[in-house]
Image (cartoon, rainbow, N blue to C red; front, side):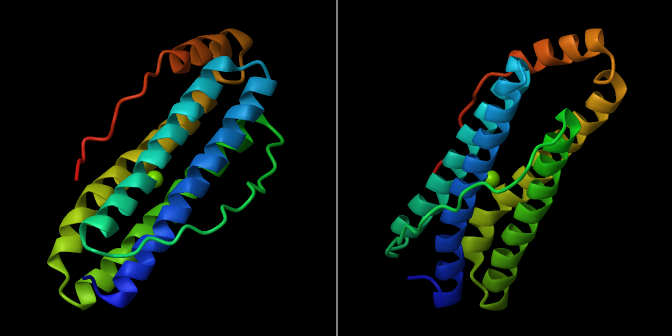
Length: 170
Ligand code: MG
């Protein structure tokens, strides 16, 4: 069994990861509506990754004999008023998720829960990648997005993204 606070935070993280999937589907819908199918593809795959993250937390709790409680997933409430705005939402959201992972890590560290820290190490690294990917999207958009030909090329590049399962298995 895990420490009560650590287990509760891991259980909450299941919900947060599913919310992330919801938010990215919402962003994908926005871009699909704008005719940017490549951007939509990129965020649809991002949503799949977030579902994977949720399932990893769920599996981790079950592997440790903890009961999983699924709560309602909040409605995505962000407004996307421009192509760049949706990218900004994605970047800010990843920074927020990093803070959530760090909070769980702090709780595990406080009670010398080395097993949970080891589990979370993958997520610490993953968040570094997620923040970089979101920041790269903004940089690419700023370089190429304001020109129609550049936007077309960037959209084509993002259309080529394919889903890969997470490298962490439990
Ligand atoms: Mg995630």
